[in-house]
Length: 506
Image (cartoon, rainbow, N blue to C red; front, side):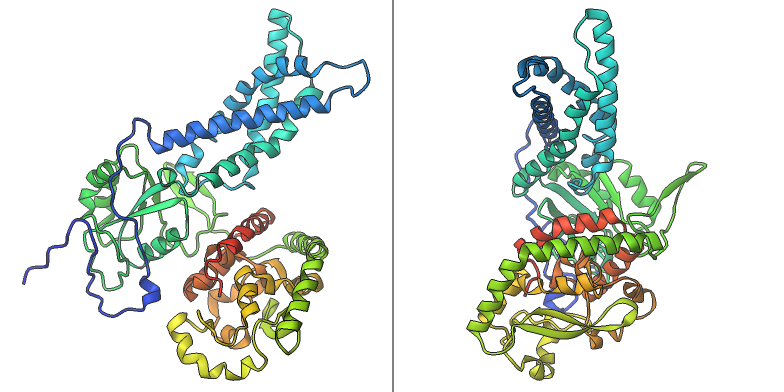
């Protein structure tokens, strides 16, 4: 019997029969074809970033000039004089940012850079400062214009280190809901890896997933439900019709040489590839060239002594400051819990932490007294809500009205700052499991016990309780294998946004 004809666009019946609703809950954007504009979204976004950087640099130069004002003394240049001499050098800084690829870098990334990705920006601004000194010296010698010295350049550059990333972050946040600014993505492949990619992109507000192409979309493991655009050979025409910004290559049964030939025909479309052994590759993996062949290093999944000291210092300082900051709010929450339902204010629960040792994790009580006693009776309902050994119900009748609010806002976890301060937990780390959930974690996944569990982590910023158990294990391993102080700061930076969006909070 001939295979059934698969429609070019629409809902693809993969013939899987009944499946778990949670594993296939994937709503893809319709394959709409927008009106073609004379300027592509990528170029329009790049122009917007240039304008934003120009405004940010102008503000930084103005702050630097204000800092050098005499304030009552007769000596020193006037503000207008300083700005007249210094503002033209914004062009030098813009050229330095462009030289570091900071206007094309985000175009080549699947997602824009974070506020805390300050390395390249800092280097570019430092280069701009050096070039400003050189250009100023040349202009002074050729035209006799007043020369800009080290003090002026320092005052110009220091505010820019903060204002430039802030300006970019503000524009990115303002445009996040704009459909025209979303990166339009098509996936090559339809198996488990493609499904995992689709589920992750669904949680990214700046990505619009248009569907997938594959020569054999009826793979037994395929759970990617959505828009099917045909075989891989049709990818160039699909990219033209849908104005695709990026193609994300997952795994397919099609021979890699055939896929490579098709990808080479895409022209200006950006291509991202999920590497083989992606479970081992982390963001700290390094690439090097071996006579034209790219070789990738796998970062060792362990923390050195200096890293542990730095992480512990961050925990002590951070938890102390946050306890002082949230102490009034914690007092109000404690009083509300006491007034709204009988029982203690705090809830102590055994969790497995560093080196597999059990400790008492403290939270605000969000359930009625005796909720743990009926937990075994709810296991059947739990199997329909989450996979793996985790216990989490979407609608748990044991939770109080106030408790639902505390959970959705993560305010119930504020007392864990005490666990962080005394060294049982960390501000950032793997999710702390109860003993029966941790019992089945062994092998490579047991690397999660090499660090202290965290109040927040990759699981918090990637989907919280909506994450499949296998993805949660992989995130914990990736965190341990790729740890850096900057990564902890980035996770802390993104945590408030994840909490406010309330994805996976129940």
